[in-house]
Length: 386
Ligand SMILES: *Cc1c(COP(=O)(O)O)cnc(C)c1O
Image (cartoon, rainbow, N blue to C red; front, side, top):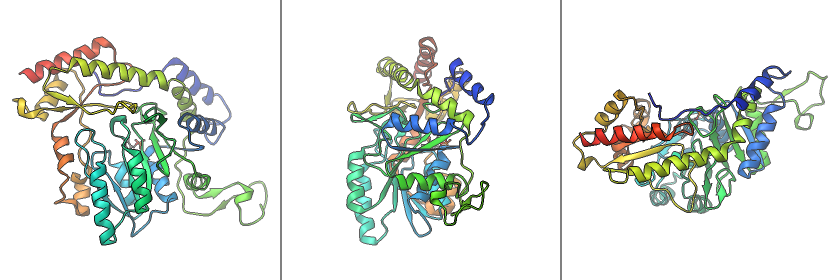
């Protein structure tokens, strides 16, 4: 089966991870700050806090921005559940803003309409999480302007988008946001097995996230209330977690990051081939803004169902039977059973639902070769013609 996504691990990556296994530090050693410095430098933010997943990093980001009971967090329904769950971990409420059907990113006009209504009702969000879906950056300049006008914080969910550029600047420079979060799950752009990071410009936010990542404990004398009682001494200030990334993961991440440019270029090469080889079929790729560079985590197509005799389920099952591991990103979060019990049972996000009904993600990953991609295209062609 050709999967929809797959990690790209080289022998240099393996050597890097093995070197850590032979070293003195498997965790809390030098590899994590080294990886954090590399991530920060790559995306142009002064601070990076690595974590054991993007889900943890989103939770840390929400806590550092003070999200708590009584607060609201807004995100888009076409995302992985983690973008919404971080609000609930903090005891806050999640609300959704419909997507732009051409990109599956949060609809900025819809966001603006909802913000005006929320200001009238006194129900403004504390945090908005735009998700750079499939690696295509959201319209951050406009979202940043709305954040100023309406007084909310912005966390960019860039789980798909390390390596992307918004206009001419790297996603993660936090020019229009407080914090940007990346995922290093194996299907994402670079991997640490499991892992994530939060980057930001504000040192106080970075320190808060680092403290909560490790039990709310500090060993730094300058942060302590009392003089150290001895070399074993530490103080706990807050109720934190163990959300740490280990050194094996971090060194793998540093090695992966050193190849990110060629790996995103490879994704662009494959996406451009899909664009041209699918042009005569009743499918539409997502719109990519030529002023940006998508990281191209995914290559979703939208089926023109009105021109087809098969529905999305038949297309997906037939392609899988024929060895093409297509997938669907994402089931709208508000339709999940858990969210239905949270008051979303009757909720309507028409653009998200319409998108979901006809989307299929085709295989896209750096190790996909031309022959395998041709196979994907010829199977898709036959399935759509049937
Ligand atoms: C993968 C993903 C996450 C969660 O990442 P993990 O590292 O697996 O916790 C969050 N948001 C989006 C949009 C994702 O795709």
